[in-house]
Length: 186
Ligand code: FES
Image 1: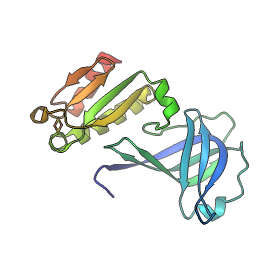
Image 2: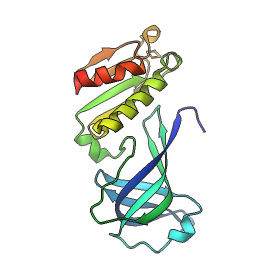
Image 3: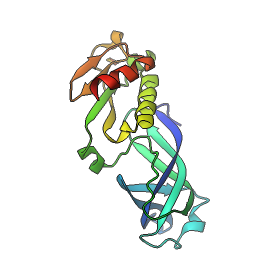
């Protein structure tokens, strides 16, 4: 696994929309309509035979699996390990950072954090992780987008972080500073 990939578990519920087929016409994933918009979820190989053709569009399901977050690009990949029936209207969602563009429209702010080598050596990966956890536990992950950014030329003062829309720049950020920064801007 690449060094920019972080792996965690997720649980997500919503209405099954459709199967996604591979070039060979085998089922490789599903699309799910969730409270945060549509999500593509890959099915693990062990789940594919059991799941093919049994789900009807509109059926409420809960999906559990693992998500890989690329801490450099912010891209998320979901892979289902278990699918079970869910109650209509249930809205379980613990995905670290919704990637769907429709969510971005309603976001209130953005935090950019340098993920280039000098800042990473000084702990920017740990700061990104701490931010991710803090936003999730406070429920602000739907409103505030985390974004990896390139070098801004302040390498020796890293980890560097910029909070938008306030355009506030922070240097030498440590995980213990996260709560204070979030409180100040959101
Ligand atoms: S590496 Fe982060 S500012 Fe240069």
